[in-house]
Length: 308
Image (tube, rainbow, N blue to C red; front, side, top):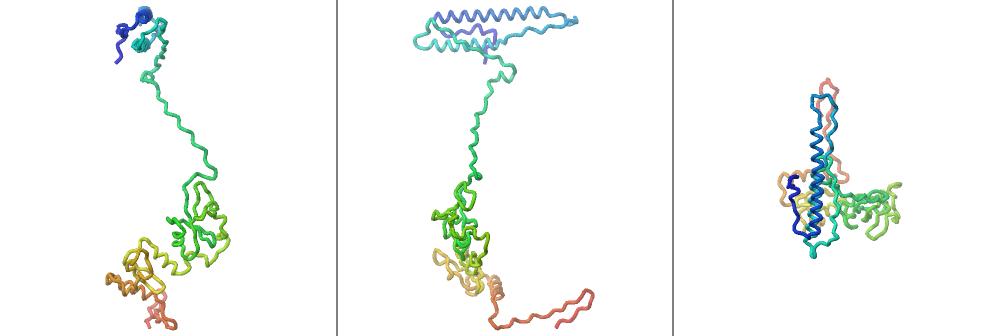
């Protein structure tokens, strides 16, 4: 809490050298003299004001120097003097109090303290040409025509082969900052642009260069399905088969059995799967399919024709 202005003159620093005490006594006397001059000036100005009833233009009151500034000046000088007096060896005769000046606040918010400026933010770095930098992207490339597709989590060439079992494939990676397929490199550090069939898929179609040419390709893909569970059914060229569980760490074709031999199937589920198997099995060569009954249709409003 700040002391009231009337008690400013009563504040005395701790014991210091006589020469420094003389300097501050003189400073206190000068401050008291200046304050008395302004007090007398204020009193004279108030007595000289005319009566409110008189139609006389009033002069603005004299500007008063804020006493807060005098208090701050005196407090700062005393604090500096006390710190110097406590130092070993005292204060020399040539000591002069440092000149300290304070600007009186021009408004209420200025008296609350200095305005804290936010630290400067670093300027953004230059943007790399060719687009924003991004992390590496893995792609599966079909080596026979250069077609590419997302790797879907594949981390090696075998992972791409599982997604495209009927065509040769390879894993390529676009390095950070690359903006075209030619910048991708294979697991053998060979660029895509060095591939003999690079971008061939854009101009030609090769029926032998497809990921799934035959149902066996889908079967091979199903064998690598991580979500495969016991009791799952899969359609093959010979009909439906049921997964009976893997006998080793990897799934093989022998782990699938016909619906009729699948264990643990509910009666209704087995009947439904057998019906699907019967409907999907083609008739033997030379056998004629049964002729469905003929149903004649008639125009609206005409009597219905009998069925044969």
